[in-house]
Length: 228
Image 1: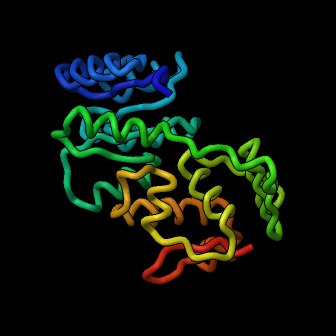
Image 2: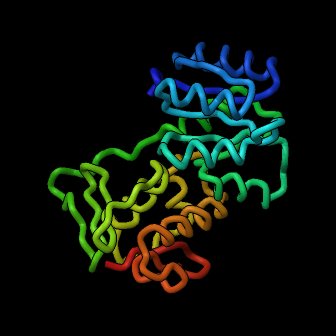
């Protein structure tokens, strides 16, 4: 997706300029906003494939902006933060971000995160089942539609890719590293907190009782399993 449109949101003009130059050099289209409020306006006026969003801004901060964007869109979001604390990273994922990168970062690291956020798993083979049903849960792998208990569920791209990988390997424990590399890419493998946050989000959306899941089961010390 080197022709993807990317919105850069950061209150530092030099960082915006460097990121915009880097992205354009890689073939992406790039626009920028200096605040969360401006980002919301630009997002409403145009279509973007990815938002690079600074966590620490005056006014509407990155967490608030992320929630606002996520409330109405499944666009890919990467949070930019100077914080190293795990609780801050989890807060970014909880707000709806697909990934985060800690400042200062190199151009290759930024590009790797951009590719990971835009990444989509290949379509399932035509010979395999395109619609998978389990009780009151149904996922159409081709149309990317998910229904649970009689209503359609909206998932973010990463939520869908994670769920799709698990339902495509039913009843088998999938290790953390394998899931991370399948959904985010080969540069991942240690970010187990990603899975905890995203599985929790998925359970809230598709499970009747998220605290007592029927489908998305935890395999202690191993990973996760989709019970079909």
